[in-house]
Image (cartoon, rainbow, N blue to C red; front, side):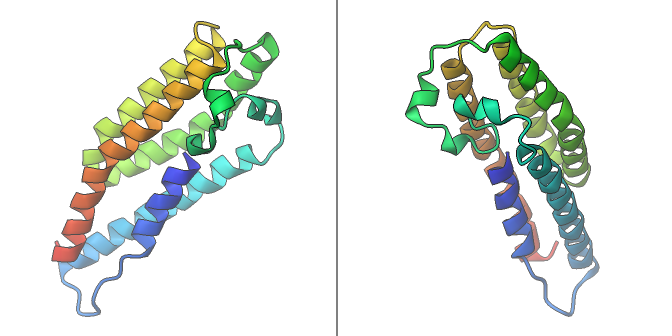
Amino acid sequence: MLKTLSILVGIFLSVGLASRATNAQIQTQNQINETTVILQQAKLCLTKTANSGKYDALKLHTNLDDPKLINGAMATDERYATREEAVLIKQRHEELEPCKRKLFDGLASIYPDLQLVLINIEIEGKRNTKSLIERKITWGQFNQNLLKLAKQSQTDIQPVIQRIQDKIALGK
C-alpha cells in the first residue's frame, strides 16, 4: 500500500502546467494538488502505524506495508495465524481503516474512474484478512493473495493513471 501511494505521489508531484493556464488546466492542477494532499496524508497515517512497533510480530510472516517485499519463505508459510497474531491483525486492520477510508473516499471523489478499482481492492483485502483471522487460510496463502491483489491493483489502476496523465498533457 505504501509503495502504491509513493508511486501515485510521484506521478502527481512530477506534473507541471504552463504558466498561461486555461480554466481546464487550473481545474486539473487543483485536482493534482488535492490528490497530492490526500496521498501524503494517507502515507503519513499508514507510516505511523507501520512504524509504531505494535505489529512487529507480524513481520515474521508477511510484509503488509509493501507486498513486493514478501519473500519466498513467507509465500510458502504453511502455518495458520495464532490467536495472538489474529488479534494483532484485526487491531492493525481496524487502526488503518480510517486511513484507508479517507484515501479511498478522497481519490474516488476526485477521480470517479478509480472508484470501482478502489472498491475491489477494499473488498478483496478485507476478504483475505478475514480468512487469515478465521484461520481458513495459511500465512502463505494470505501472502500469495496479497501479492496477486497488489499486482491486479497496479494493472487496474494503470489505465486510470494514463487517462489522468493524458488529460494533463492535453490541458483538459
